[in-house]
Amino acid sequence: MTAEIAIMNKEAVALAADSAVTMGQEGKWEQKVFTSANKLFTLSKYYPVGIMVYGSASFMGVPWQTIIKIYRSKLGKQKLDTLKEYADNFIAFLNNDNPLFPERQQKEYLYGNTSSYFALIRKEIEKRVKSTTDQEGEITNTQVKQITTNVIREHHNKLEKAKMLPSIPETHIEDIIKKYSDIIDKARKDVFEKLPISAVSLNQLRKISVSLFSKDIFPINISGAVIAGFGDKDTFPSLRSFDIEGIVNNKLKYKYNKHLSTEISFEMGSTIIPFAQREMVHTFMEGVDPDLQRYMEDSLFQIFGKYPKIIVENIGKFNDKEKQELLKKLEQVSNKIFKDYQKHMTIFRRNYYADPIMKVVAGLPKNELATMAETLVNLTLFKRKVSPEAETAAGPIDVAVISKGDGFIWIKRKHYFKSELNPQFFANYFTEVKDEKK
Image (cartoon, rainbow, N blue to C red):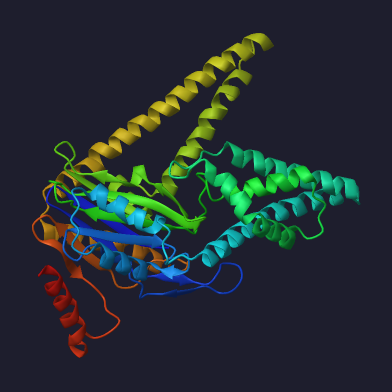
């Protein structure tokens, strides 16, 4: 996991990211957390645009740091008018038959994701078979086949209802089935082995596999990319966020995160957006921990739900019909009162917590934006440090400020080497930039 944040006002955007990266697969072996990962980068050497990544440390087996540096070299001195164009250009770089992601790697990715989802289906089948055996003492082959058919159909129907991603062409589904049917069938044989599967279910399994690479269905362990800064014609900074999963048949599966993207304007002078582990920033901005807030609201909802029935049951002069009518009215009133409570609490938190902070952020100078971004990431790191869970957010915090006039400025940046022992690194970097400007 990761703790990252972007804070923007009309003058600049401050980005801060921790350095923790988790290695290992949960449940198979002990996970290790290293605190040396780079998650914050310049997207251009010449213009005020930066990128943060979170979630998976690599994409299709290639480290994000390598991908970004190759893109940055390819971008060169190209100047784009808006931040949106920079973001779209980066997505296009990933999406356009990129030699970084060869066909062999795409096949491995398809097989791995398909096998993982098929394994979930098998576990559900085994669970239902065990339940039937526990109840009846035995189970027939016919019953096993029926359970298998039912579970596969349920998953197929659920995924069929999912929306196609707007970036995926309609022909992508048929193209995957034609091109990769042998890999899908191999995953099916490896996972389901000798389980009885009908011809209809076989076809449904293929469609399930294809849905994983074309529809708005994203697993937890994907990458997030945050691109922020200024285009050449942008007056104020903006930010665009994407969920990025993988590539099959040279088509990138990604989604633009509208709720985690924003732009500063005359009407909106500041914003604070946390990524990945967001609970401490939510607590700071809203005055209450999100888990505590959910628990309180769930508890109140249950209380409001019980009271109408308790009241009606204690009214002796009403007959059953009158009690049912009264119960229905009281339930409607109870629901309205609860919704009004939620509305008033939201307004209170906004007026007394979030809005005053945002007014201050709107006027912060660049150095204070950086301090605030680092502090909010530090809150998450400290919470993880004193919690019993693994420190999935930890390590040095990289901080950068991007402004129209100064460009991308590092406030804090870790190196895995000592700068005084490696002057050639910085000399080569700046010489390259100087030469490219000629």
